[in-house]
Amino acid sequence: LGKSVVGIDEILNGAIKLHRETFVEDIVDAGIARDWGGSSKLDDLPIFAFLQLVEKVGVWCDNLGFVNVHILLPLHCCCHLDVLRDDENNQAAVLSVLYKTLDPWMNSAM
Image (cartoon, rainbow, N blue to C red):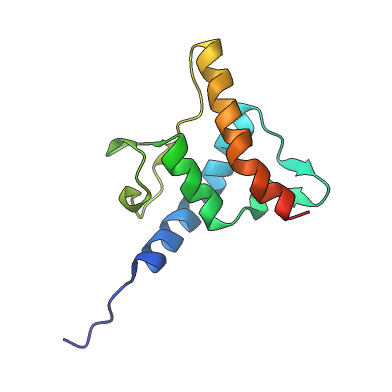
């Protein structure tokens, strides 16, 4: 016995820490500026903001396919936020979800 039990918070922290940089680049590639305004930067988003994005826009993982449940994020980096769409209307919808999700986080940091 004697092994420590890893809690869900520790697992999620580890998964987001591994994916943070990639997720920020995905958000920028979707059309949102890295510098939100004032002192707010995408790089400074809390873990909970990324977890919300996983649930709202989903993630594409090389080994798992589409994932929108944060507990399924792998503990190795192979995932990207599913933010790019071929259709202009669908891309606009994704951008709207990104802004609506990120706005409270970014404005509270100002």
